[in-house]
Image 1 (cartoon, rainbow, N blue to C red):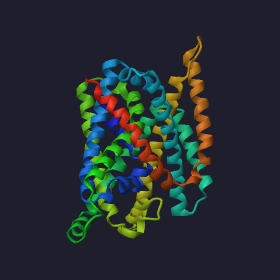
Image 2: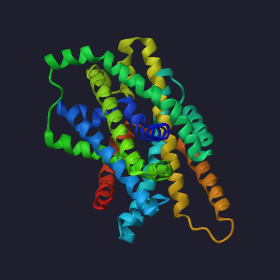
Image 3: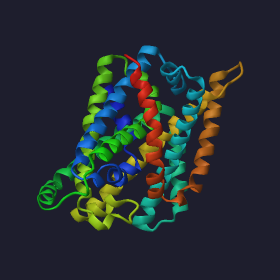
Image 4: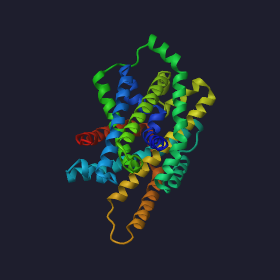
Length: 351
């Protein structure tokens, strides 16, 4: 169970980034569709659980060691595999940059810190953790993610009375079943883009069908609870949240100043864990696609990993000024469509 939970925390840390914890993703994909948004969220989280299970089963059964190998196993189209691998690498890199932008937006909104200074500091921390490979990622997630989960669910419970009274007196948005269903699928599919490369790297920790099923089920339950908690909290926002980069921090202030500072810690945790997951996935993809000549291949791969790591950390501050909410609203739905292609190929394989 300890090894299962460690994997669960890495998976949750990969999915719950700045967009999720800040409320931007939940509002974009679910809140605007009214009551059916809750159902859509549960369906989306359940689909994510199935994706987690399917990837682990394929990776274990076919003994794949990298994301490129996984693509070759689920698809025989060479050109398609190269194209989707390139797109996935691009998404992971963009996601890394989005997390850096999210951290900068957080400290600029709440404390007035310069965006450039925050993005540089964030890049330095990411560089230090990613130097330690998967061990560093698992250590960080095992400490930070349990606290994040408990605090968000606690806030959801604290907000329960408000949610019940709100639903009794007001309608939530405009319900559109078809759009809500599409949005739910897109949310799971875009999450899968970042998640699948990380799941392949976690394969050595999941060596049986039973463990794969347990991790998928636990992740689906936790994601549903977190999503519902944030959905209900966003109901408090009304007009206050439309022009904010990080609406949840403003909403949590209703519970007291101490809660807002604690939630800043939640968002920082979410941003950091997703940043290192996205960065790690991108780095591993680049290393697996790079052809090395004969010699000490392991050493050369490590050197290449370090060079690419340094490059992305140096370049990250230059995209932070674009704006976090702009990046989320414009790029995530687009990548969701691309992630859907992955899901189709994954579930074509019987495990």
